[in-house]
Amino acid sequence: MIIGWLFLAFFVLLGLSMPIGIAILVVCVGYILLTGGMQASFFISAFFSALDSFPLLAVPLFMLSGDLMTKGGIARQLFDLAHKLVGKLPGGHAMAAVLSCLFFGAVSGSAPATVAAIGGLMIPMLADIGYDRKWATGLLASAGALGVMIPPSIPMVMYGVVTGESVSDLFIAGIIPGILVGLLLCVYCYTYCKKCRPTLKWEVEEKSFGRVLNDSKWAILMPVIILGGIYSGLFTPTEAAAISVLYGLIICLFVTKTIKLAELAALFKSTAASMGPLMIVCASATVLGKILTMERAPEVIANLILSISSNKIMIFLLVNLFLLIVGALMDTVAAILIFAPVLYPIMTGLGMSGIQFGCLMTVNLAVGFITPPIGMNLYVASGLTGLSVVEISKKIVVPMLLMIIAVLMVTYIPGISLCLLPG
Image: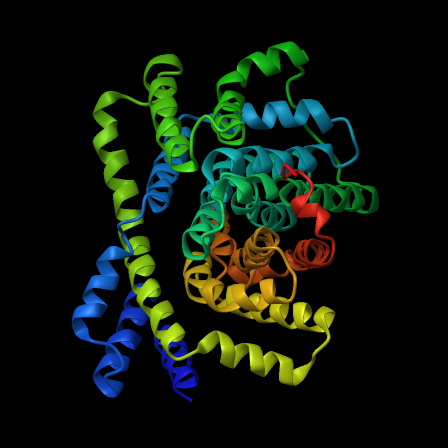
């Protein structure tokens, strides 16, 4: 009963437009005052100790690294490379936009940042070429979700923090699911172009593959160094995040010279401003997780699910449906911090690997980036184009269905997420 009231209060506060971190704090404080189930001193200790985490340090560092590379103007370099690979196919320009999001995701780890960087460049370009502007906007809003699927992924870091699973293994496991979604979106581009046959009025400047590869070498080297170092065991994900910041600073300040030394203070301030609310969410969600554990929430929810069905396939389907609803109503990081500790023992108890569930949860909640009413990518795309969220939402139906197909494939085919793991 208490668990139900906690979630009801939380979603009511969200409905009143209260920030997620503050809403969680209010629910936690209300629980302490009304039930006395947790001492105030324990609440304070748990709140601050949640931030004292070495793996969690990777989050602000990857965010800063992504901001650096975004300011460094790598979006065009990545598009030129992607266009060289698929540009001559039907729908090749749109496919190149999707691949650019895939490449950029390996740099930023953020879905909204991917939409802002790649969409800001590609939506006007696709519209000028002859693609429907609303369709192009929906495509880039959808492809932006690849930013959290492909490693390094901030949601995967958070999942690893709350469940104890290896972040390095999660990054490895996320490669194939991210590529799978990218390929499905490329098939969508191909099908659209064959059916609608947009009149292409402009072609991208033709360059040799060697020249394109040389122009984009600094953008390509970043994920190679970072992910290669993690997978080879040279450094941890947190150390990789620090190296990515150092790499970004060197490239942007001294090689491409796209950022001036005087601009760094404003860049650091912007990252800190984005990170502050996220840290409040992390700390308060950790406390809420302890409350849910004290109230035996995993057992209650497991019993509820098992009362509906004892069939493992059906239970996996119910969990996916639940996560799709959650992703549409709240921020991805908050959803992972609150629900991963609750669902993790249920899914692993049914035989699913914790790593596979981490990939499943990330890909599933990524759909929430294009699902109203929260759908952050929709609002970013709207800000870039001036189109309303409703107009964009009509164009993301097919990409959303394709992403849900990918979710089901990751759920029922373990090899998709586990095939690259050693052993």
